[in-house]
Image 1 (cartoon, helix red, strand yellow):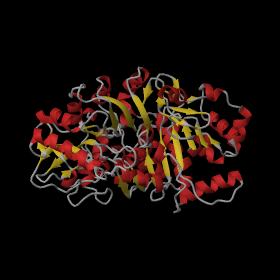
Image 2 (tube, one colour):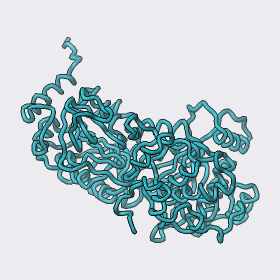
Image 3 (cartoon, helix red, strand yellow):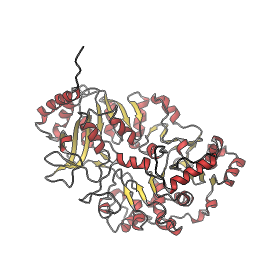
Image 4 (cartoon, one colour):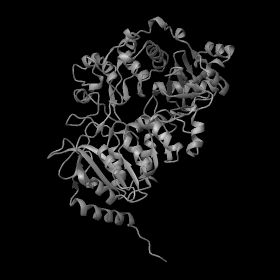
Length: 550
């Protein structure tokens, strides 16, 4: 019987390290050595994790990987949260990479769809963030990971600053599975403000020619908001947040949720809701949340990542944000999504399509956008065992509707959309494009972002559909049609059926909430421009230059 080897991963790493050190001579290497180093440590068919996060990108290392010879490196399996750079897609066009498991791909969604159509790429699965992170410790452990950080010291310790995001989970999954961790940093310093990644986890470090790419993904200019967004935000505050006393929440990215944030110091305050709603957040530091913070609505914010320009404001508000002794924030996407799964009363976000069963998806014809964190944030958590007022009331509403005893509460999951998207494309459809995309991708299940069974409310300019109060699937579909407006889905509603749902409070129009169209004015917004947000921050918020219009 052949003797078992219990250290094959360790020996494989040693061989790779020996090849690399013959090139670099030490853990620190020069930018011009990057291609040779990558070709020395990465082998054909390897799983490679590139940091690809929501905002920050290991862009120098991505460009260096693209510069490798496809005759040397090919058939790589990329595992990464976000496909955000053109280089990420070009790796497949060049033949260096073949397979990918990811979460989000907004900026490169059209190119990704084209590659799938042309059989240039194999998609393993489209994940939610903590799902992919979990697989780093199961079947998708990287052989090599390429990450980025603000700075490193001579001992190889890394400081990730305000945007730790995914770095910590990638580093641990790699270092403790005998993978090779390579970091690009903006600078090498004598002393770090704090140590985020210990040096003995890090194998190689390069000071990149320029700071890593960082995108202001969550900044929304209030000047771009309109009366429809204000109307829907008023309905959310008065029709959902107030009756359920929603205190622990997450807002998805977009103008719909930005409007809600900017109405908290004005409209919500007039309703007497300060201290009763929106006190504890799991959220990237949205600039549009600044007026609510300054008005005393917000008690704490834990962030999966940061936002460009918010650094000094965060540093000056340590009672609100999770900051270290140096004043900088420690973000962590994995822990934030753990909080998002178990500790929230409510998730609210937008989508591109909703079907008559309430299923929603951002994977549409010609675009494979992915999901980001929505599938995790937008699902109920049956393992939860602590109660809050909102969670309990949602559970009571559902149990009473079904005539069952209430054994547990329920997370509120809200989809907020206009009935038509840009270009007059209906948001509501009889069948999601995801169904056909499943066949195109060869997936086991359709890439649905949030399952209809988890959605509790749908909000449009037409009103609110409270799906917790639907007694069966037929009522559920009718309620959805009732807020789908003049889309083909909405035009197939039963007038009598929707009338009955209105009588029971399942469907609520703005007027049923005491909200009138004429009151939905942008004058209600606490800030109507980025410049006014800067004033609210007392000059601490430094908006990126593309948002400065004065």
